[in-house]
Image: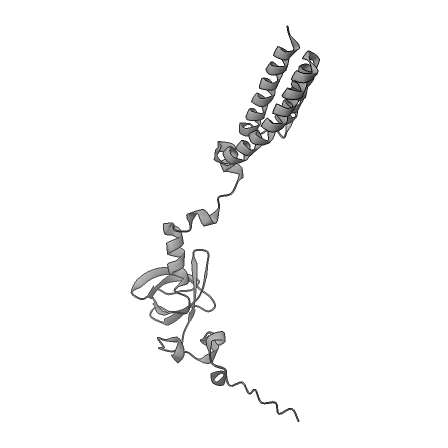
Amino acid sequence: MDPLYWSILLLAIGFAFVSLEIFIPSAGLLGITACCFLVAGIVFAFMASYYSGAIVLLLTFLAVPIYFALFVHVWPHTPIGRRILLTDPRANRDSASNEHYRKMTGLIGQMGVAKSEMILSGQILVDGEKYDAISDGFPIEAGSAIKVVAVKGNRIYVQAYDGESASSEELPVRDRDVLATPIEELGIDLSDDVS
């Protein structure tokens, strides 16, 4: 049999092993086998003639990067790729879960009422909607005023609040957003009176 036919057969088997490497995790064993078949195919092409060996070598060096570019594009959509690679959180930016999270983070700083006794967790009522929340500190009695202090993941953290304030302007200085408060209201003296 002509060495050129062997060359084509070995190259086809090499590219088939590269394809298997995409779908079957083998810790590189299939990739190494594929390289051996590709090199053997190039050697057999050179055995046929120098001209055919140079053409097969050039075509192989052009085909391998294209094949790997397709591999990088296709692999994340294979069953193995989907299991190994994490999904991009930006891909679901407009999903319902992200809308829910934005709504929850919008609760930070708002006042509400504890619907149930909150020894560790319980229900709260903020703007007429019920939420499950966690007490960030001491137990809170049912009917007590609360303030949402944080949202971490899908958990809302609240603290008991002593006042009936509804806006941030009516909150004591310690509960306000300090960076948005004018310096005069914070009681800080900026005079250069060092002597």
